[in-house]
Image (cartoon, rainbow, N blue to C red; front, top):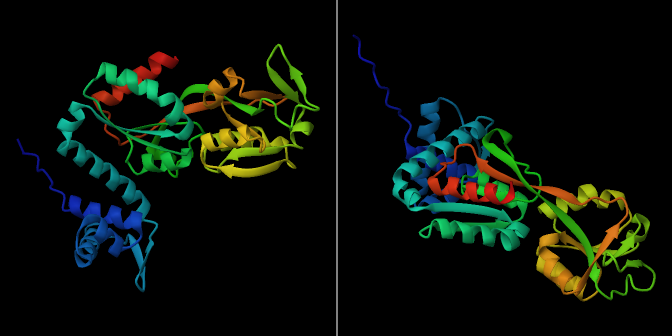
Length: 313
């Protein structure tokens, strides 16, 4: 019987690591700093990889490197291979319970903590690393294979949908709100004692100053798609990166705000803030679980998924 000949690849992990770093930083000098290699070593490794693949990955214009169309598909495969090799090197760490969790701002600040408490209860030795930012920044980290699992508020918009898995998780509702005795509402808006809220029409709301989250956040995505499209002439006073800042500014009666029900629940209960319901406006949304298809799904990864699904299904 003829023996099967095993082919040993000529491409090295070092070459792939150099290529990925150059792809991400845009230059050999920045890549050499990131990898702690000389610039000549980086240039040599990149040239060797292009020779092995028999295709250009960058177009050299003077000292600049412009990505060739070949670069992106090779980058996706290189990231997956490097991730798998890292899994082999750090297998004991994954077995011990290492997980990198990403979350958009509202989830990270208000919903993730009790989930982590359950994870630590189930796995006391869990080693958790968290990254909290707006939705698009978190999705970017998932694409870079820096995060094992992400929980985001807005519809995921990855650069390459083919490498990203996304799953509906749960629903949430945004709430328009104001200071309880706001000067913008008390003199003319209708207050419902039974529902403990003010009621406005779209036309009335359009005349009031509004404080919203910044572009790129999941909250802002829903505001744009389901609120602001009905208010072409509304005065958006400012776009703010932090939900707490919006709450404080609304409490100072600068304008009305719009945030997740989870963010203002305590203030509504204490009657420091009051909900404002607008006729014909639905601000419900879906939250998502997102992960990279090539990411290693360790036992702690599955344990975290189980906790999420048990609580919200």
